[in-house]
Length: 132
Image (tube, rainbow, N blue to C red; front, side):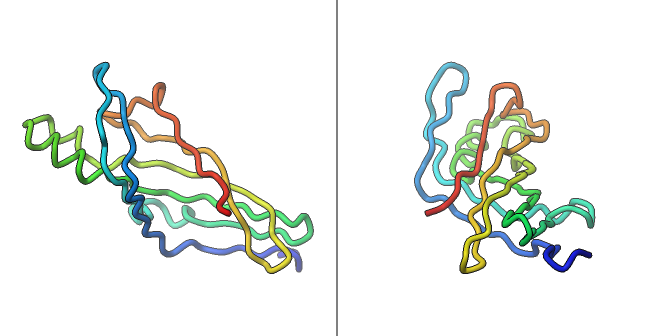
């Protein structure tokens, strides 16, 4: 290991985005409600890790995450849709950003979606933007 490089394991991630998002489904706009996100622990031991490269002042991390839309799932369940449509969306977030002077960092990056019945990878895009 290089003295200016630190490897780390991501062990916890619990997010709730209370502000609802709108989705277009079957040519209709739907209020999907809030989103929750958590680490996908069912992934291999090499997932959910990152590197702090102090030599280049860059932080990199890869998160394997399950996204849930509880209100949307509840609505779909009440309509009697196929259970596969209400399953969590699994994504891999590959992000990076600058290491700041106070050793904090702001990561941003793109999300790769696993196959899902409701969210087509061809038609669905997601990104993580740096915080403020």
